[in-house]
Amino acid sequence: MTEEGTVDPRVQRTRRDVVDAATELFTSEGWAAVTHAEVARRAGYSKATVYAHWPTRLDLVRASVGQICGTSEHPRPTGDLRADLITALLDFADDLSRGHLARVLGGVFERAGSDPAVDEMRGQLYAEGAGPLEAILGTHLPEESVEPCVALLTGGVLVRVAMQASPATPEFIEDLVDRVLASARG
Image 1: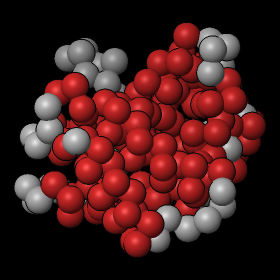
Image 2: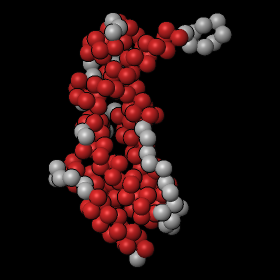
Image 3: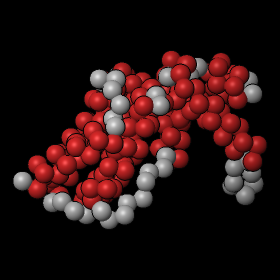
């Protein structure tokens, strides 16, 4: 900290570089790749510097999840429920298909229940991903229908891409959205 209470720009740059390196490792190679030695190497700092700010691997991963959630972009809603859901789910499917989101979620799911910090990250990732869908649905459906619809929609895409290793095509997503909306409207 400087005398004025602001963070020294060199410290800010170090933090940014290290978190960028950790996030790139996490999204490209998964949780196991995020080690102090590899993050330090990629960021261009000593391991001692990395350990000083992030004493554990979990600290590095938590910083990565924070960056992922803080920089994620979602399609802007237009007010057309069906179209907005399809667009949002196609975006989710694309993130899963490219692998980076699947690696992040897989690492967190694998360690869920092992540490409250991991469970906090799981909640943070869920809120970031489900929040836009909840907002879209919340403007069109009764409150009690929102959570089940989000689970059906995201679960359908997750199963299709991650479990069945099949593409979530626009046709698949359109059919999924139509079925969920029909069930919600009863």
